[in-house]
Amino acid sequence: MKPRTLALLLLGILTLAAPLLAAKIPSRGTVNCDALNVRTGPGMSYSIVGLIHNGDEVTITDVSGSWYQVNVGSHQGKWVYSGYITVTAYGEQNEDEAAKKPHATLYGTDPARPEANAVDDEPLTRNEY
Image 1 (cartoon, rainbow, N blue to C red):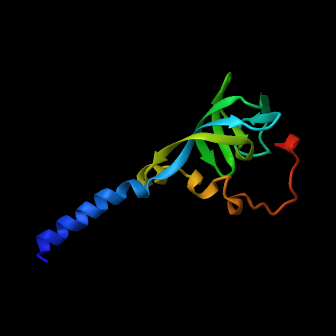
Image 2: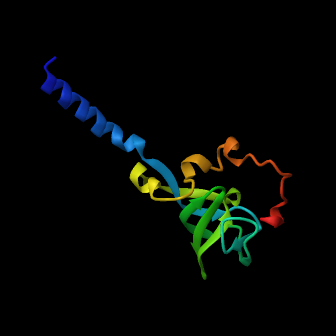
Image 3: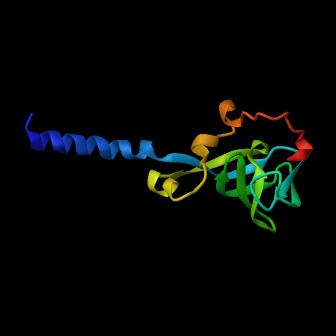
């Protein structure tokens, strides 16, 4: 095979494979518990600023570990525990976009993957999140 033909073939393969390198990240979801605490940051040490309820729809704007930053009602840019959000829509993020974020994206913290939710401490009750 001629070098030019080989180069064009490799370029074509890479072009077709590019969408496979994009990570799916959540963009919308629905609360799947009776009441979910809304916090100022991604963790239980952050203050609770409100509650959202079963069936409430959220727009997910960011992911940090097991926490989603959401916009819902008057809570804009606040955080909720991802285990109580059923993701209903995904967006894509390429490697360049992911590299700009200092924390993990959903690709490594998908709540549907049991290994992503492993916690060394005792489990928390629903009301604690």
